[in-house]
Structures are given as C-alpha cells and as structure tokens.
Length: 365
Image (tube, rainbow, N blue to C red; front, side):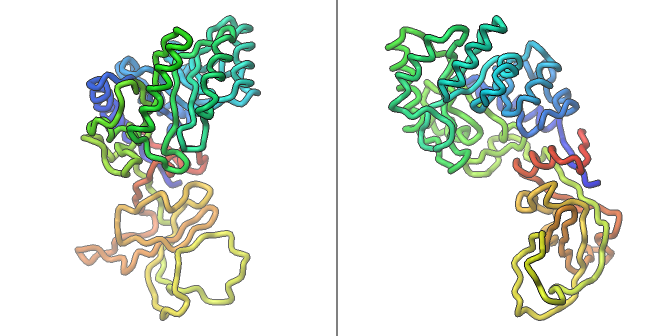
C-alpha cells in the first residue's frame, strides 16, 4: 500500500522552537492535534513528558482523540476546540477539561452534566469577529456572558475567536484588539478576571514580530505551524521551523507508454477526475504510471510530487494516473518502474485525510 511517512523528530523540534518563541512574547499555547486523528502510536511519540510540560494544553475537535489522549496521560489538560453537540456533553465533561462554546443551551447541558459528575467544567466563549463560523454575535456577548456566569459548575476561563478557517478573514490588529476590549468590558462589569484571551493560531504567528498582536492576546491554538512549519497567512515557512515533516510514498503498479488522449466516446458515466486537456491537441505517446491511491484516500490537489516532471492525469476511487514523460533520468537510465515509489509532499488537509484512510500505511520515524 501507499504510505504516509511521519518525521517525528522534526515535529518535536518545531514544538520546541515554537514554545521558545511564544514564551519570549508571554504567550501560552495549545498544541492542536487534529491532524494526528487520534493515532495512539503517533501521540505517544509526540507527547513526551518534556513536550507536555511546555504546553498549556492539547486541543482537538474529535472526542475520540481526546479519549485517547486522556488514556495516554490523564493529567494532560485537554480542550475540545469546537462547540460541542448536546448529545456529547457527558463525554465532553469526562474527557475535555475545557471546551469552546457559543450556544447557551449547550452550556446549560454541560452545567447539568458537570454537576452530575461533580466537576467544574471550564469553557472559552468564542466571539464572532467576521469569519462567520462559530462565535457569539458581538452585540449579544454581555447578556450571553451574564447568563453563563450564573450557571453552576461552569467556569469561564477565556474568550476567543476563530479567524482564517472558512473565508480566510485575516486576524488584523483591529480584529484582535476587539477581543482585548471585550475582556476589559466583561472584567469591569462582572468583577471577574478572564485568564485566557485565545485569539491566536498558526495564521496569527507572523503578526507577532510585526507587533500586530495586542498584548491582551495571551493564548494561541497551533496545529499547522507545529506539524508543517508553515503559517496559512502566507503559506510560507515560519521562522526556522522544519517543513520536512511528512512524506507520502505511492507505489507504481503499472507503467506503460500510452496515448495522451483517450480513445472512444466519452460519456457522463465516469466517477473519476481528470486534468484539463485540449481535445484538439495532437495525439502522441508518453509514459504513464498508475499509483496505488485514489480519491478515497486524498485530494490530489493537496499533494505535490517531489519530481516536478511528474504531472497529474486523472484519479478514481482507488488508483491515480501520472504522466512521467520520457521516464529517463540524467544518466539516461529508466527513472521509474513497477515496484518503485513516487514521492509526494502532502499539505495539512492531505495529511489529515491520509491519516484517516484505512487503505494507507502509516510509518512513524
């Protein structure tokens, strides 16, 4: 099978460098482990004691992952980083020390469950700042906070926001400043400190050195930069982080010289996806490699062949075709053959999907 290779040493070094950088700016942070898909062997490698002690907490949007993390280390602080479904409140209180919330009805249910479990459940209230995903509407936040503040066994430990995840709204200084102003307003009105202002993520990291992150923002949630070394703000390498963290190796299962255009009547029956082709182009032969992965495993738009001469042709549920041209290397020898691998660099979304595919081997170095 095709395999996803994980270079854990590079990821651990990224975590260490990020921690040093954020601590220098008095910022706590949570490592967002979504991309790991709760894989126990991966988590064991990453969540070493010397790494855990650097972090405020581990965040994930999958309850099954938080269960695995708690089994691995019950003392590790966990955050459920999306608003919980009401049907999950029992498990949320059991496995998440903190949860992100935007619905009063859900927080009420968490309160009832926390009383049953004799726990204090901590929450971070997210505020809508323009991304139009999760978040309490700004004009309602005072009344919302007041009602939540009165619920038993619920402790509000922070306010925050999510930017850049759906529409790509940038976390500008003015956007982040609003969180600081809400902190001041709520603390003055209710005479209660709000410890965490969670306004930062991987997309916000480049703004720190530009002094575009207000001092009130003291908590970041970071996944992509730790695991891939990049920031989605510009999709470039951040600081001295390693971008050589994941590799996707696919096996060549067929290699033949074939025409560059299909032969016959093309119907609407195809379930595959192909690259754009010019129907008027002249026919010629080129070497085509069939690889052992498909749409079920990964979106081909999210992987990049290390060999720039390898060009995508088409993909189906379980096989993908690439044009490899003349198939000759610089030494004028055959470059690829059946049984060899073609290597790709996967991005965040590709890796997350590959981690969830039961048809892809996982190799943890």
